Length: 127
Length: 494
Image (cartoon, rainbow over all chains, first blue to last red; front, side, top):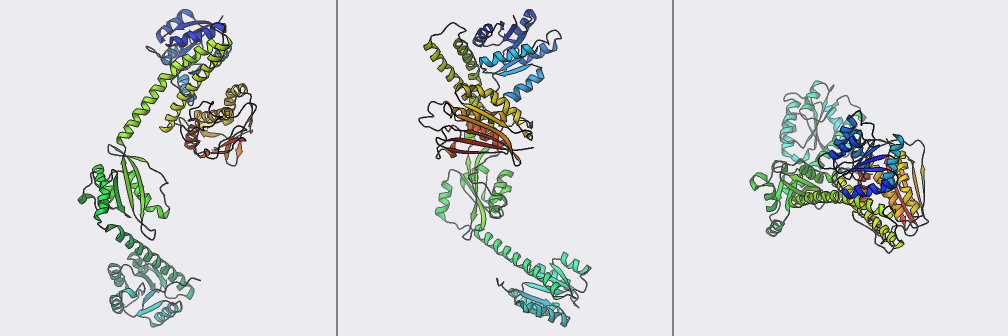
């Protein structure tokens, strides 16, 4: 069973998304801020990380940069998740940040559950 | 044939043969000719009959007082006389004469043809010069002496907007008290001086220039163009119109200035507030959508048919709100001129294909058949990727929204001349003719029995229009109620 770490400060979003991904057979671990996220990556060694961008303490971008700089952790695929972006411009902004932080994929919030599952599956099958 | 009015020509030449020849040639064409054999005689005629000399045909080989002296005198005292010189070989002396103000030089060994080639050009130049003079005098007379009508002045003073009138050379000839307080104008410093001296704004000056030059169609001000200009601390909505006399000649310009400083401060506040609220709304809406979806999918236990129905509606409403929030943010960015983020070479075929993949599900859910035909080997297009996606998404989702079950949505992307053309054809409900001009207005939605149940912000098409404009492209719509609608976007190929 693939372990997925979801890091997001919105507890409601975490719970609902955990239900969704659990139902697809993933083992979902939750973290509610960037620091906790990093700790859990090291402790749990997940198969993938879904990272919200706007979080207190440490933003998703920062977490991603740290992950990708760590030779042991850099292979773990990361999806960036952000509500900052808009539908119209979702590519440019998040893409640019994604490239800088070497994230493997990016998703603009709000995301359709089906779309999220598809992206997770795609990325894991590539990894 | 048009008979041109004759010209008064004074021929000054001491060689009688040449003098006579010139006289005959000019008389034959119906001009009035006077002759003088010396500089003194010529001066005498010019002084006694000032209106009788339009052009002076002057030999540069006169004895005594030279022709050059005569040129200098005439240039000083009677500038309106056009001076044409004659000499044996039109050498140094001719160049010197022209530097002093003579128009041209004719060789004395002229043939009839050569004589007229040069003379006709001089006559034409004289006529143009005279027309210009008349115009100039008309213009000066018209506005520098604004008649002091007390009532009219009182009316102008009562305007709550600033009001400044200039003559055709942008010298201020009139302003009201509001303008005086807006720009710190005083009668002594401002009246009769160029507007650029009192009001330091290149932009404003350019509006006055454009209004004044509007009859020469150099850069006409657009109808309804009312830009907001910053002058010092103030934000002013400016409107400048040409002032014309009875004959339609532009004799000046009049500018109205509406102080919108507080309004634009409010506007900024409003838009900051809007984007803050929009961002704050998006996070909880994302959670809400996820929560409802998860429950709806039965991941939190089985649902009754009634619960499914109600939750399904709740999900649609949530998505509608998300679209609204996105539209507000997008629209704001376009208003702020940020609709183009990054210009790059784009493969529109690839972008369209990806968009169609995303949209296909919603077309199928609605029972529509959607086709997409993309021409092979399309030229690339320079533009903003996000913007292009937004054009495709908005036009396609509109077609899907406004086409009833069982209908068709057909997309084509091909070459049309130098453009790449994107076409969306549906056989949906169509747009009533009275609405078609307003569909690109923000928040405009067509209200009929059929559209009531369709959710939307009324911003989609104004977003599309904003992006299309920012890419120097064009959008065109044809529609017939009950038959369907066609949108065509023409994008200039690279």
